[in-house]
Image (cartoon, rainbow, N blue to C red; front, side, top):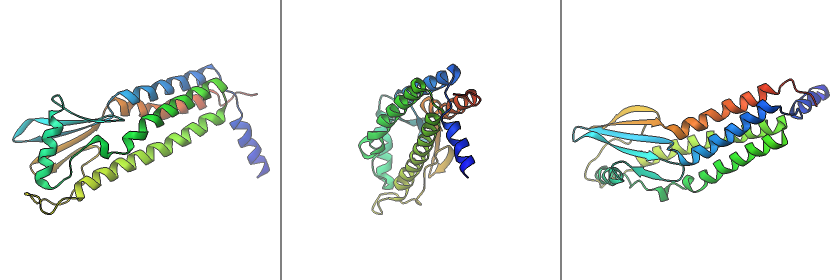
Length: 205
């Protein structure tokens, strides 16, 4: 056990070479880009909406297509099925996710400057928990919106959970949800961290 702990401590204390530091800088840039780029989109198509209605999700806000009019139209439709209006103010995640992404960017830059393997491992673990919590929270929000329906609404439909990835039929609408450029930036972070650890795996103090 002592030998295993010593081996682990030696690995965590490994210095980072130039390639690893560059990967960490790239990951910081990806975090920064994800703060400003769209993360997800939800697209609704129905016979009366041939061109569809689009909702774009950013780290800090929801934006409807067609100059914001699509969000107004989506909320009008939600009213008929008893779903509460979609509003950025109701998503408390949008108040802290931008700060979390900024913090991750700073931690990545700090690791690039200090250059220790342990800092990569810490950043990877924190990002894993952040990603798991964020996706779980997103799913819960979708479940909540689709199941907390007003029974007094003009139209009655079966409770549903909007899909997170892919397409599904909801009444006479086809709903499609897909990740956008901001989400792909975040998906690139684990690869950068893996490469950073790999490039310095044989470094010695």
